[in-house]
Image 1: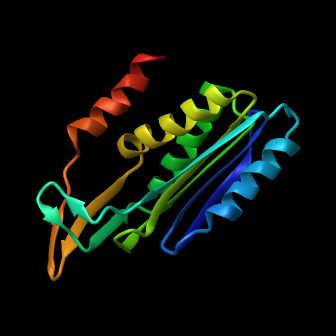
Image 2: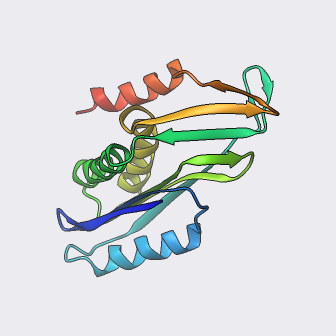
Length: 170
């Protein structure tokens, strides 16, 4: 269950992965770095990455972890298109995203995004854009569990607000 989309897009190397197994952020950084400096556009001056972890709590208290479900094919395509949009919008030299699915315990890695750009602000903005928009545009469904009890998690108003700010900046 390791779905990888990768190709040269708009002069930048773009990759995205949906997988169950954990990932190595050092390897992902190295891939982002090597593709950023090897692209035809060159001129990479900044790389920003973000690694998200499963929190061990929610608004009701402690949890033991989450289960993420996805729609195979659709989820991979949506994540890849989001990364491509970040490249276009922020003039990136390289970008990537990895998101895990399945059962993930507290404090385990769940998501990684990386953006390489000529200047630091574009790289920071792109990484924030990817994380804010991922929750809105990539079909993933989350259940939290504690012991034998599970419940679906609804979309948060704060996630909607974070995505909305990028929609206004077109």
